[in-house]
Amino acid sequence: MRGRFQVFDTHAHLGRALHSGRVATKDDMLHGMDAAGIDRTLLIPFPVVEDFRREHDEIGDALRSHPDRFAGAACLNPFIPEDEFRAEVQRCRLEYGFRALKFQPQYQGLNPVSARSAFLFETALENGLVLVCHTGTGAPFALPSLFIHAARRYPNLKIVIGHAGGGIYALESVVAAQVCPNIFIELSTLTPHAVLEVLQHVGSDRLMAGSDLPESLETEISKIEGLPISDADKRRILWQTPVRVFGN
Image 1 (tube, helix red, strand yellow):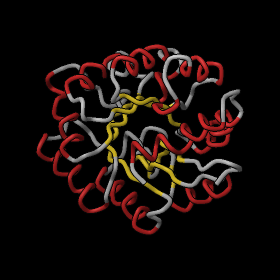
Image 2 (cartoon, helix red, strand yellow; image 1 turned 60 degrees about the horizontal axis):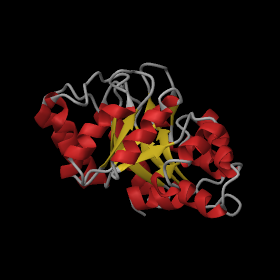
Image 3 (tube, one colour; image 1 turned 90 degrees about the horizontal axis):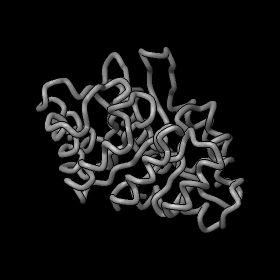
């Protein structure tokens, strides 16, 4: 609990990153959450790792030891054999109860509008998972508009536009959410005035907060708390929308 608000951080990374050298442990995450008053966090592997199964197992261990504090997301190379991809995502759901699948086109250069990418969306849908998609850096495959096609093709699949297009493509995320009711927007990296612009077009019941990295946690949550909007809107962004999307 953070003041008057429960908080669900819908974008945080756990494990070891090959591309940046970052290391984040379960204890690190809990310490940061407790200090910032965060009730629950969606744990996502870093996009470039040595062993994605090991990273998934580390997140699974966090879920088993603290089921009230964490939810889990799988993230793995989409260019491994398709049957291996599907089997690992299913393992994460059955063994650990993961709630989401992460796609990171900045490091996983799969075109989301090509027929080749259909298995990605189908795997999430078949397992009842939310598909969290990095957007912004990594364009063109990380453009929010490219997920409109899949959202319309798979209307029962919930798609979260991570980072809301990274600022420069924020209005693309607005358009995507306006034309696809199954698209939601995660607001990390946006400045407060950009969040207010998004709110002019997309309701708070389609928006959620995320930290991405621990250095940004306080800033990302504080910017929502400080917006000149109603407490009801803040509650939806900080807790109610993510609980409805990812489950409680």
